[in-house]
Length: 350
Image (cartoon, rainbow, N blue to C red; front, top):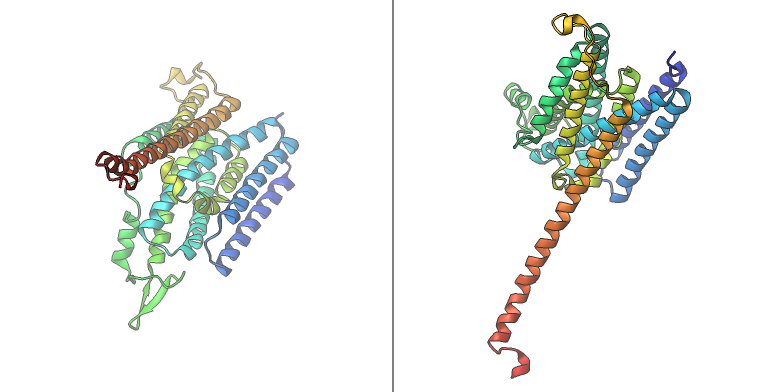
């Protein structure tokens, strides 16, 4: 019989995670600011360490399967969350959100992401329990999403989405922000601030990303508890990571290829699993299809390798471009000296 996690551990974990999120949110509301590199680094390190400690508890209280599934799920969701973060950067930039209130916008966006993903997890778990063939749809969706990741202009249409356009038609909005308020008064008239449009845009983006991330992690584990906690840990620290990475996100050019590879891999894995557990009468007469089964260790190794290769390749490209730019600048600066010497204009010749 497969070991199960103690109920007290599952309940206690959820209480602690929710408490941390609430404290994080209260700190932002009380003291809105742009964190320093040191502060952001410490928070990101804290949340990563917390996830690893949690994984250790999964190994001890559950078994190797539980711990490995959590690690693979957390890494998958973390990589997808970084892509989510890239879109957040575009949205906050397009709406020109004041730096002091970007933390608040990010935190609300992260909470919205958790809510949407929580609902999708409940729905996904219920569907999978009754209809395993839904993995065919999940797998096809992830493969299509992987293609969307790498095609040109994948993240260009952000900010002015359908939800934002509808909100502008339905409600009056001011041109300027009023701190972190959602409503303000302009010439005696009450209206909403652009901050509400930012939250609407972030929420719409979170909804779209939940459509990708939930099928992806269900391809690794079918435990709703592991699915949800992996999502929580992936989203915790994302706000600080935004300030830590700063302008580096748009320079990680090959990151999208690594994410696309992970999505495509899990999509294929889901389809193979659906074939292995086949219940559809028009496929092999309703009998399981003898196909390879991708184990959790192969999944974990592929996820780590894909992100490592994408990140390293991006860093190498950035360094090469910086070196080439430096050489061009050096040559450009040296050229006037050469001309001067050719004309005999050096002070030593006079």
